[in-house]
Image 1: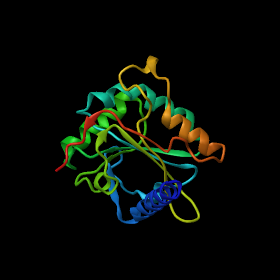
Image 2 (image 1 turned 120 degrees about the vertical axis):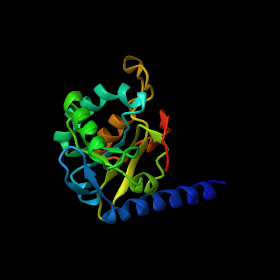
Image 3 (image 1 turned 45 degrees about the vertical axis):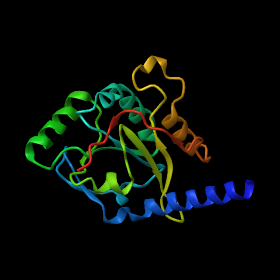
Length: 192
């Protein structure tokens, strides 16, 4: 039984590592600047934090202050933060709405439009918000953490496990994050 479990873990980590390697061809438009950003080019430093987000999801709104705190704490330590919205189109009205949100919320990070859900489908994202922490390495990129930001989306004061914080702290210490995954809780991603 132990050998079977070990084989499953090896296959799981291999597939996670390989899945992060196909980012070269994924380019999304930043609603804030209008620039097209290649996702692979953003995997640098200590890692890339992709936060799948939607203005239509009340859970995403509940995380606003926590996202600001995370960016403030970890951006200067080598992590890049990007919001990704898979539920809007690239039309000017949607871009304006997202720009206004960034300006008014003080989140202050790129807000990419995943118009055809290319990135969301690539990573099989099912919830909003859901987080991926992608780290660069000699053998390609690795998803070091995937899932929930913490264990209480509804009440910040009741959070007892800060999964994303813990994952980034582990990477800063040169350790593998544990847990490497936590079930994301929030709105179901509307697929097209």
